Length: 242
Image (cartoon, rainbow, N blue to C red; front, side, top):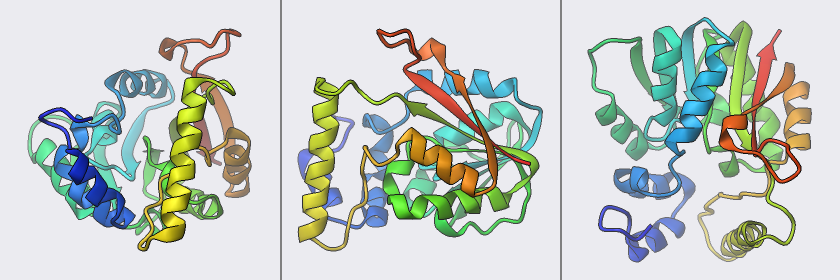
């Protein structure tokens, strides 16, 4: 985190005391130098798994950040890829990373809140990486309903979901501690910065997707590794608008 290219401790502190939107505006220029960016191996694994579900003409990256998911869509979609995010700073970085012209589908950027997407049913594919911790559990159904309304019949909403760390492991306590610190911060400070790692549980997610109208299945992302019991460390959630 604290390399010459990444944010300083002071910069992270200022971000953490800002709103979610303002915090990401501040972090945007150095976001890709932090662990928050989705690793390339995850992007590549999802690309390979989703390619078999196509073909796709138009794709939507929900909460696109600096555009890593749009890079996936450009490999999967034939006509256009659209990134949507509420942070102007993140969108500015994404535009710089994907300048107009060149080969592949057309790329467009839209500034909007994912809880109120400004799209008609126009997409064959929607995906998202690493954004769901910024939505409270009560907002999840509404978010999924917005994605559902942006997909054509037969369109698919996909995202990777990692298995929870074993209870008592170092990762378990790290995530528990982070979420506890965020809850204390949000109880004592305004504006809130919503970022929780332990609120996106598979059972709840599947229920909300089903309630939003999706037919849901899970595909193992075995190239991302296996747990000691032989189960995959990550799965691809595939939610289809029927």
